[in-house]
Amino acid sequence: MSDLYGLATRALRLIDAETAHGLTIRGLSLGLGPVDPMPDPFSLAVDVAGLKLSNPVGLAAGFDKNAQAPAAMLAAGFGMVECGTVTPRPQAGNPRPRLFRLTEDQAVINRMGFNNEGLAPFCARLAALKRPLSGPVGANLGANKDADDRTQDYVTGLQAVWGLADYVTVNISSPNTPGLRNLQSRAALEDLTGRVAQARAALRTDPAYNPPIFLKVAPDLAEEEVGDIVASVTAGGFNGIIVSNTTISRPDTLRSALKGEAGGLSGAPLMTLSTQMLGLFHDAVKNQPATSRIVLIGAGGVTSGADAYAKIRAGASAVQLYSAMAYHGPGLVRVIKTDLAARLKADGFASVSEAVGA
Image (cartoon, rainbow, N blue to C red; front, side, top):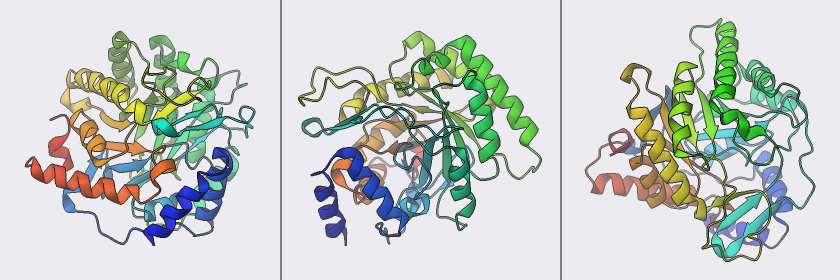
């Protein structure tokens, strides 16, 4: 069966990237996705801000923007699945073409622009999920491009997915919505985290339900900004930070003729930059009081068990991937988990949590 999905992955690479992605999501929504029948080793189980994961390999936002296939991707072997980015109102995004494969570099450039169907169908699909599921399903929230008050869009998103998502991510780091990354500045971030915290407090009517809230940041931050972000996130009661989104930088090592396309770069070339940024955040988090210490999730460039292990040892309690599946197919998840478990054992770690920041 894995050979069949590998063949499908190779066939999809022969057509336009966005069309191929649409066909993939359609197939998954119809129940045509792969199933990983192997139980995860106990060593891979991890607690991430209260989320109980059977393994630390998550699906990053961007793959399933409209929450059409979270159950299928959990069945494929992911420890958690993040749907979105979703904005309050439907949004067409930027003109096509807007998604490019840099095959020689095992990379992707996108300038999608938060294209999605909006909160109404997104929430309806989350509500229709047949629970219990094998892992948490998160909602990645964005702001509409033409919003007068972008922070209010995040509050609106939180209110809509409350009770439906196992965790929530506030995405202020996409490079494809003009001005969005300005929300990473200290003053703007303090306003954002404060208003989200107020909304969260008002929504907490059931003591048993308090989903963790994460902030997703860019890899292109200045080192001096890291401490301010950690302080603001901690003060606002957020539970963690996802490091990182795509980069607007272009490494000199890129070989593809498409490297000059505008947008965010993801895939293998992002691994070094995003992991260095993760390390900076880990150093800043260590300076926080243990009672309020946030968790980190490593994203960007994960294509192997070695990459996942490097991010965990740099400070991540879990990792996320997306772009690598365009080249390696869904079978990559099992390969990463098997290799990661072997690396933990070889280094004498009984669990993922023991290796975090080691």
